[in-house]
Structures are given as structure tokens and as C-alpha cells.
Length: 341
Image (tube, rainbow, N blue to C red; front, side, top):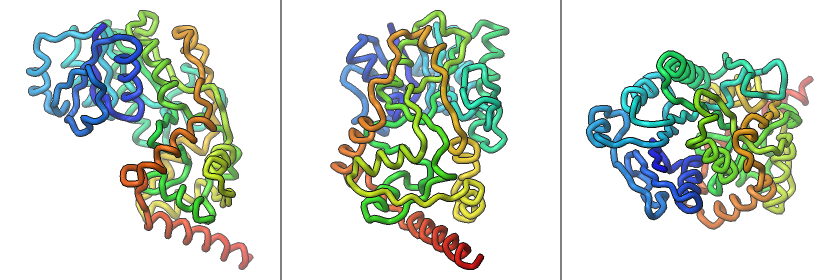
């Protein structure tokens, strides 16, 4: 079996590529700009190109066909329109990475199935993903374009720590605040339900849908089965660091209001996603991929990630003093308002 990945070196796609090559024996091609050669396993073929240069890509792919084409970097309709022009008639399955944030926030039920309404008034990113899905499914219905829609939720790997509230440089400054004994901001009261999935578990579900005739014309979310509150997520991280957790709870709407002047998108990231309870019903995926299950619990995954992060300071520990100072100001302002009431 022969697969082409547009991208292929990110948090999700890298684990899929490794599984295909090392465990399943696929012939794998990557089409990307070649910026992360160290993330490409031995035996993987690479096509160095910017997919936005459609003419160049079409020339480099001339005469090639694939069993599966996967796009991990299509964020707007023009991107999937381009993919349709490039791969229509040249692949038996086109797999598009959408997002579980496309589900209605808040949904009528916190239990999410693939039939849950798609609508997100709070996040343009999610609305663009919905528009991409609609274009692709229309091509499937009208022309038989062999699309499969994949909706990941919060997926992480050994280089990432899942958090609700962080700055522009990612998770590290929150970890540093924990290590320094400082309070860390948690949205709401920390009791909303959330699902985090280690990328190797995600790869099992994804590869099980590749070349699977029952996946054509269908949408699947791929998540783990473990559901945690944000309090449990943060406490698990603190336990793995062997430090006490000092949570400071702030309403998501307040974070959005005071974050906007500093360029923090808490309307999309929190109100449109992480502050809402979600529990994923994975029964549809498991019918198509019986091997799918959670093999890496969060307490295990976060230790894997922290071991890597703490041993690779130059790569993973990105200081964010602006976010650190912002957290201190938010906490100080709320404490001052409490004292003045």
C-alpha cells in the first residue's frame, strides 16, 4: 500500500508515519518543505515542495498515484479545492484532518458523536474546518471523490504538555510556574470534562481507517477513552513534576476580555473549545477499527512528555516572560477586586 502525506512531521502525522513504516510495511511519501528532516523515518520518500505552489507540486507528482492521500495542513477551503484538483482520480482515498472543535459549542449533549451538529460561532479556525468538510463531502456526493473526514481532539506527543491556558510560546511557562511554586491559571472552576489523546494511540485509529472501504464518505473523530476534568489534568502534571499544584480559577469570559489586548485568543481556544464539557462516543470508530483503544493513559503520557521536555531544554523549554507577567497581573487584579468588595 502506498500513501502520500501533505505535511507528515507534526504531532499527529509523525506518529502515523512511524507506525505505517515500522509496523505496517506501507510505502510512505511525504510532501512538505523539508524543514524537519530529523523527524522523517528511514525508508520514507520525500518530495520537497510548498503545496501552495500548485503547478510545481503537480509537476513533481506527475504520473504518480496513491492508495491514500492525507492532508494535515489544509485549514481553508482554497487548500482543499487545490487538493481536489491535484488528487482527483489519483488516489483511492483522500483523508482530511478536520477538528473536533467543529462540533457545536456547547452541544445539546456533552456526549459527542459524529452526528453532533457542526457549528462554532466562537472560532474562525473551526468554521473554516467546517467549510472544508462541506466542500469535500459535496464532491463525494456529486462525483464520488473518495473522502474520509478525521476530527482529532486534543492530541499530544512527547514534546507537548496539554494545558487549557498558556501563552504564545506554548506550555513551558506554565510548567515553569509550577516548578517555581507560583499559581497557575485554570479556566472556570476546573471541573469541566476534557479528553486528551497520546499521538501513538491516535495513530492506531487513523491507520485502521486507511484503505478501509467502510471509511469512504464518512467522518470519524479519533480520541482516547479517558475523560478527565481540567483539575485532574493539572494535578496529574504537578504530581509528575513532584510539586504542589496552586490553581487559580478564572472565568473563561474574563480571560477572553483581558487576554484580547495582549493577543491571546481565549474566545476560540476556551469558549469555543476547552472550557466546554465533551465526552466522545468512539463506538463508530471502534466498529471500523476494532484495534482502537487507549493504551497510554494521561498519567503515563505526561511522564513520557515531561521526561523528554526536561531533558531537551533548548528544543522544548521556551520562556515566555510576557505571559508570566500577564498571569501575575490577572491574579493581582482579581485579588484586589476581592479585597475591595
